Length: 61
Image (cartoon, rainbow, N blue to C red; front, top):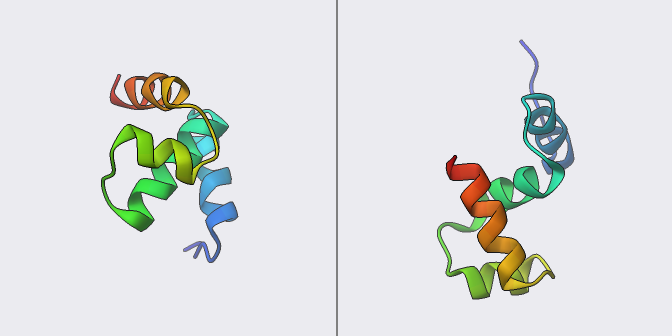
C-alpha cells in the first residue's frame, strides 16, 4: 500500500488519474479548506474567477 504524505504527492497522483494540474490543485484546495465561493477560491489560488469557473466546470464534468 502506498501512503501519500504531501499535497504535492497527492496532486501528482490526481494528475496521473487524468486531472489537469489546475484541476488537481483546485481539488486539493477544496479538500483542505472546504467549499468556498469562486471569488474566494480564486483569491486563495492566485488566479482569476473566470479560470476557477472553467476549472470547477471541468471537474464537475
